[in-house]
Image (cartoon, rainbow, N blue to C red):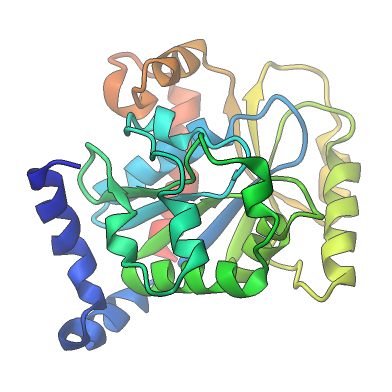
Length: 275
């Protein structure tokens, strides 16, 4: 991280100092729900594309926004935000291992103002993440919650993994992401039943963001009848995928935007920012 990025990052994160603790808490309390999770309910969704663009919108609304990539086996948000990946042993895993690590050194500033990323390294070994439990995960998310206005978490749908249930446990609100697949409703119910069986509140994960829609016949009423609310419905936009492959944000870097995509993602961003 260059000197300019370091200065920008510290100017945001200095809220964590004792002198500004009160003002940081006051800012944090502006939002009722400041830790928001996103979990895929089926294949063919693109959480990273959704979260990166949503994070950009929230940062443009003046919110100091941190994205936490908890897909510890296959992190990819650094690619979507055009951030240099951490080297092995740095980033998310480093702050998990010790509470003596200054988290400010592991959070990366993106090229977008007020938008930051905490990510695992793609070079980390799978087995290095098997040793962590809820205590370490709680500590890291709590620190981010106290530091930023809003935290967006990309949650892996892997219920036996602590990083799945630990993230759900710490979220104030959560969204399943889904597309036109027959197994969507069953998958959501099955996961919530399991989470509830181990004592994790599931009422906060009752909203669904449909994305990558291709106008395929699908029974949305089944989703609603099962107790879920459809928060947004985003069409598949090929240019959004193409921009992501080049490390660009669709909403920022594309001159011609799909009006339906824009309308629906703004619906979610407005709710998060104005709650």
